Structures are given as structure tokens and as C-alpha cells.
Length: 103
Image (cartoon, rainbow, N blue to C red; front, side, top):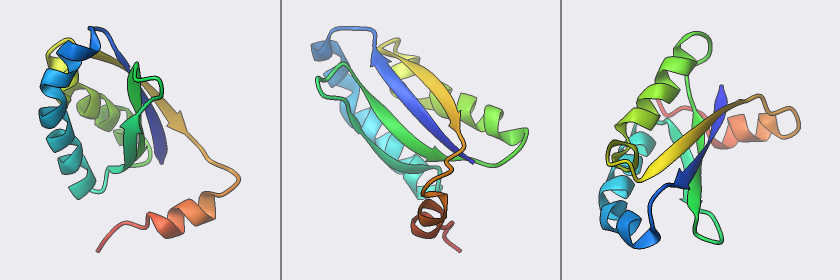
């Protein structure tokens, strides 16, 4: 299952930037686990977005909660997540091909 996470900053950007390195290290860990497919800031820089691939079924919600709760931005009260489970129709085969789980 795919999901989109919209991250909205809740503090001024200069405060958010103090945690960017820690946040990016956390995202690198998610990528290494095969959960994060792509990420980046919004323009204008009021937050960011993540494209995620999470387990299907009941585990999806728990995994999304863990992703949100483990982010240093969340832990420091700097940002708020909106988690959107996503069922792509057009382009799903291409996404599955490009982002096939690594053995």
C-alpha cells in the first residue's frame, strides 16, 4: 500500500531548521527500511511531503503512526503530519516496478 504524508510546520522556519539534519537522518533510515520512496520540502517552504510504501492491511495504520511519531519534527512539536493512505490507479504498475521491494 502507498501513502502520502503531508508535513506542516507548526513553528517558524528558523526553529524547524535546527532539527533538519536529525529529520533527514530519520528519513534516510525510513528509506533504508524500504518505507520512504521520496521526500522533499514544499514550495513555499511551509512543510514537506513524503511518498511512502507501507504494509497492506491492518499493519498500514500502525506503520504510518510509527513513522509520524518517530520523526524528530513531531517529537519536538515542530510539525504536524497528515497521513493519507493512497490507492493509485493510473501508474500503479509503474510505481510497483520502480519501487519494487529490495530482496
